[in-house]
Length: 453
Ligand SMILES: C[S@@+](CC[C@H](N)C(=O)[O-])C[C@H]1O[C@@H](n2cnc3c(N)ncnc32)[C@H](O)[C@@H]1O
Figure 1 (cartoon, rainbow, N blue to C red):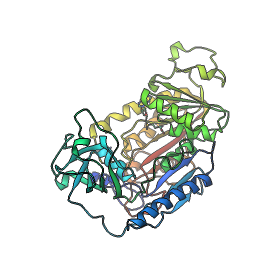
Figure 2: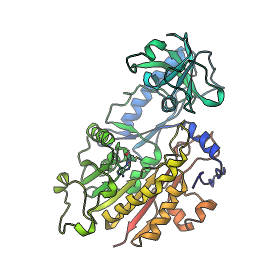
Figure 3: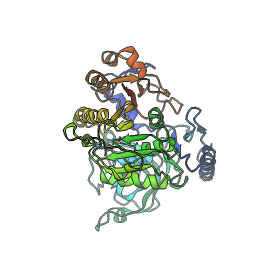
Figure 4: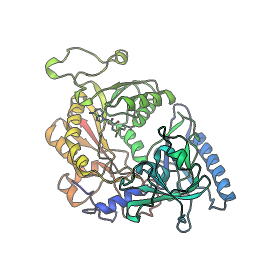
């Protein structure tokens, strides 16, 4: 069901895909990190970030830009979450004659504070040369082939920032494949998000993670010594959070269908000194031993587990996180068009994965279902289906709550008032000027179930 439901805080997004598109294009004004308490403290990371922001602000002051250091906070309920704000802005950024066209993913990265790397560039006007001051536009309609040499019409492009061109066409669109390095040093982006150097916080000390994803790990609430399944785990942001909450004690089994993403997960575990995660490349739909072939008496104790991959016997895990593959319409900034066919193809896969999750969960265990989308069929629709199909499941409050659930007509027809009060949903809201890190964030959905004994 699209578009997204209305929001009780005021703005209705029903039947208004355009508003969703506008919201997706804006970067949240806050950049959130999750601190790895296995190896560091929030205050250490906040001090490091403060220093990095101060340095940036000095260089901005030197070039005459607004240099008020963005605020930095730690979250009162989630000590592992810290966030910093954006540069203040008086008026619009100037637009320059010389233009660089980038692909939508590169455009979104610029809005998040990145520079423009060569592979992201699709177009540059003839005659553009190193040292030119340029405006950067994203090719939101995917009109340009690599090497494009004209201006894009206003309705097909989206302004993301300004910068200094560091190389000309010849180096960017070189004949022998794709060049490397920074093509445009971004001096100001449209979102005001600071361009902190990638290594501002050493790898392993913290990861950039949106606030609702951090809440999701807390809703799972894993305990030291338990055995946890993370069914769609890569690249491991939530897996490593679970492990951190368990103080590295117990077992986390991380599954993902993508081998490349699973390698990233393993690397993240290494960087973060996470020791109780074992990862497997696996289609999680098939992660349960078929009931006909179930091996009686196999115990997945903490010792044997490291050697034992999927499929697993039924009733194996204390807690299961199903952070499902989804349409990701809550992710922002995103500059691509929405692929509606893809959106409608997802609930059948989500249901198959859910069915496996229920089988693998121990009676008395906790199942958390989450997505980073705002589509009702992928969220409340799955909860309704699950409650109707699995009498063993009970919907329980997805605490801790940062956001109350959403009430609107669509959702009221699917979930009862009590059920609506249990789930947690982050949705776009009307006031794009909202200035709060819990409100100006990504779209996300969390539901928690208890499996009756
Ligand atoms: C929302 S992302 C997971 C993000 C991850 N939980 C984190 O916090 O870093 C969804 C993941 O599901 C994986 N996936 C998709 N279909 C799957 C399947 N049938 N079995 C296992 N993983 C699957 C994708 O490869 C992708 O990595």
